[in-house]
Length: 272
Image (cartoon, rainbow, N blue to C red):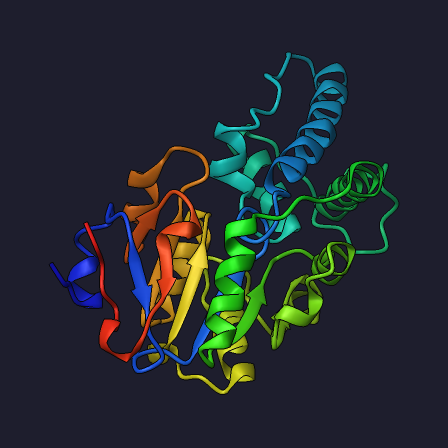
């Protein structure tokens, strides 16, 4: 049975969804957890940084702090957000407030920027020592979409987006890139604000209504809905489809092998 994109918003657990050029011009992919398997690497870097900070904070201020949880704390406070915002949100959840500082702060300073720098150094060490894996089904879908005339963008809060894509040979798959370097200029707000997705659509020459957002994080889903995009596909990598649906996903799938690039007659079709 065929269902429109609009009606899919209320049925977020469909097992397949078809994107068609007669309805959409561009598709905007998040990086971590959608294109690359870097979400777990990010989580490990966050944990190493925060656990070290929390141990030192406890010694200085009295009282032991529970370690950073790579599932709950990661998804609630840092997933999909710019680094500094993730630092602020997690520390606030522990009742800790640090000065913002500035990007030039040394990594051992007790400022938000310093902790963000420390996390990024740990991340780069992990990437360089262990490499980066990609999701083959995502790469297959991007190729299929490009073959049908879609324009493709990658949207990430990470300032390492280009380096990561280059390391796995995927830079050429994307017609536009909006990432943490753009955010650092201060002209765009990070997710859950829609700014980065709107800018990516602009660079593709697509209106939001004719563009699709593909995200695995609730903050990214919220950004897609706030930008009034034609569809927002949630990719459930962590077994929390209801959270992605509540954030506003048009459809939630477990893997992008469930998304097809269709012909003109298949526009926006979902298949049970």
